[in-house]
Image 1: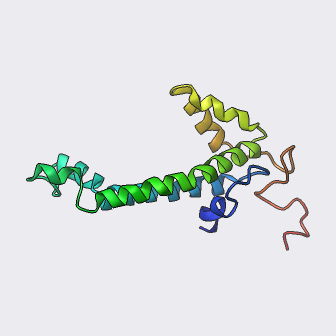
Image 2 (image 1 turned 90 degrees about the vertical axis):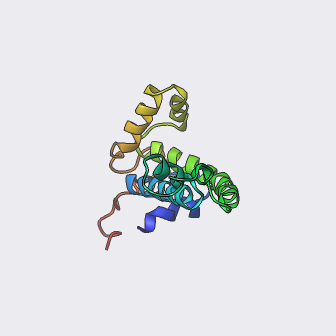
Image 3 (image 1 turned 45 degrees about the horizontal axis):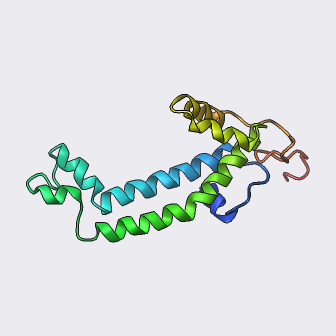
Length: 147
């Protein structure tokens, strides 16, 4: 999964294109971090307690966190600020891969339907070969360069 951290290496690079793999592996990384914070920071305790599976089932105050949950959530807030720009940048580059302008991100402000449209754009295969935003990140155009 070398592409998972590529958006962090290209921190604020809004130029060029991002493959589906780069985009979705980064999304997977963000989801995994979020799940870890929920579990370690007490959010997972709330959900398990709500279903009666353990943590916080007998003690109401444990359902909302643990003594370290404040620190964990503060760290998560800092992490979210850190990944905000790379998240926007990889989304812009992903739209570029489908030969769309970054202005399409504004469609996501439309409740439900706009977000559904963006999801479809992120799932679609990018244009083959070079487009107006740069070379194809999915394959080498020159077969000799791939060797």
